[in-house]
Length: 304
Image (cartoon, rainbow, N blue to C red; front, side, top):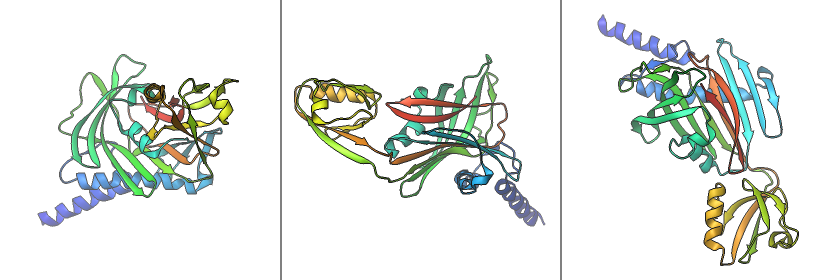
């Protein structure tokens, strides 16, 4: 009967979604949205957990801070992985990767514009991204974006292409598509050391590169107080410092007062794994970009 056939079609559609035989862009409707939101996270985790099979990854580049690898899965889908370690608060990293207004143009060199098309709930939305290309015509993407804290110290941001009635294809752009892709932000505790130093009003005697101590004046406060090259500034007083503009603002506030500065040194504690792009992208290419935000090295994958 019609009801049985309808149930069969739903089962077949779900199976297509699970095994990866679906088209790159799937219709986002009231009937499919719960399944798509679930799969957006679970498929990213499926790719992420492949890191346990070390022999399956072909490493193309490795340095002290960055590793880039690819893998061809059994379903013939290419998987791209970039991993980086950085001194940064995981909440700050999440804000940088999730934000459209303040940060995106600082780390994404091909980002042209973006907006939220529809807020679904507190951890899912539909977004529109417009990306620069080498051609005169820009690429755009209609994406389901999902974010979760899957475990203590582990956050995910996942994207996948969908077809949404509020964002039809526009003749001004070439519509691109991606399978579930995104960022895994993981905090790893190691033997990092923290040092809080009390400074008097006046010049610090420090030259910073980002937020890292680059050089010390021979007769400056910092040298006398035991500050070392390579230390990373994290706080001025009780305030978190996230970039050089924050640093200048906090120092300006306290230049006529005594205050404390907190530094960290040793091995990095936060491990930032980003991003993992899954699938052969239609109408787009992939580019790895290494950028520096306030002394924090981020590895970014740009979809063009």
